[in-house]
Length: 496
Ligand SMILES: *Cc1c(COP(=O)(O)O)cnc(C)c1O
Image 1: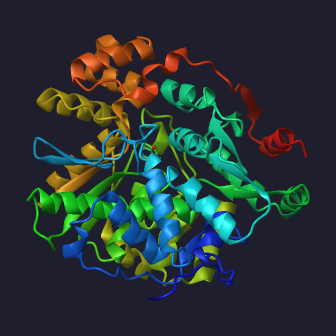
Image 2: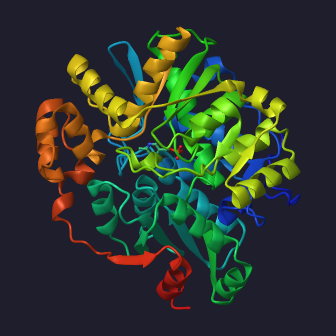
């Protein structure tokens, strides 16, 4: 079997093992790690579709993480995909009125981030052990709301690791915030910042690439790593559920093995949909990857024009986990589209930093053909929630509703009749206020925890265990800082 290595998207030619890439999180030149070649799966599709979630995870992970042993991988997989999920299926495909929803919210924090953040701590610990790292690992994470909680939950009380999460103080839902500030664990730190998600993400990237600060950390026995989707330990586990969704579509007789299906993915940082692209490159029969944005439609504009321009107003929407103007993982797609020409990616990223925009070449535009962009206004998102609920009593969360709305529009515009899986990224219970308000105006202004009870009544889906007693939990974190004090917060927390 071919060994797979990883290298930066930006030009640093050094190649590293997957364990090194997972521990480092981001490449030294600020680029993202990408595989030096796409692996080949050792079994065919006919066989793969008979696998359960863990078996599939093993097959996919072993093809990318070739420096891990079978025992190591199985230990990580078995530790992650267990009773933390409220269904043994882990990621069910649910058919509702002719539409297919891939529900990725059955994990401990009710958002799709759990699909990767339940396994990342084990991958990271195993990597550190393999590399004989004797430093304490400090995970820095920027969150638009869901990553933070999922990472805190995944890393809480894991020995040898501390985790610091930065979230936009005024840019997350009530439930999201409450989930984070009530986090237990003697190694967890939660900091609200006065800024938006892009500020948080930029701040974290800056700290990661601050050489002097890294030396200081090193001298004090610490090193940084990342739980954001810039870490390949996040990205690769996400490839699994694209195969798994396909397998379920085959098993239930909706498609035949080999048929193309589309996926529509509610997108922010481009991590989820990029995993879908990797699945396609691994041989999964995928037609279009439909990239759904909310009113922060920088990706839609990019897909339709080839120009990425972040210079625009940042809109706070009811799908806050997609309120992002700098989609980090797009850099990995650019790398793939441009034949991994690292100079080209570096130039584009330099241009983004300096001028706020970049334009890709004509040939790269042609290579974008696997993708199609769409976006949904706030009004359309709300209407989608209401329409689907009235037709079927199925309640979508606000992010899933963006995808649904974009898909409806896509179908109408193109007449594409291939089966399409709507990637459902959060439970409606995470965004109770906006979901309920969309169903009926009478719910506007009602307390979010009271609304959960109402939601339970109308949807007949019980309040998920992780949020049932959330309003009674004590708030353990109350630090707030300015967006340029993020480094000082690290120093304070670590006492260095
Ligand atoms: C993070 C998140 C997204 C966006 O996913 P990306 O990988 O950042 O594109 C969409 N929906 C929900 C609920 C999320 O938590």
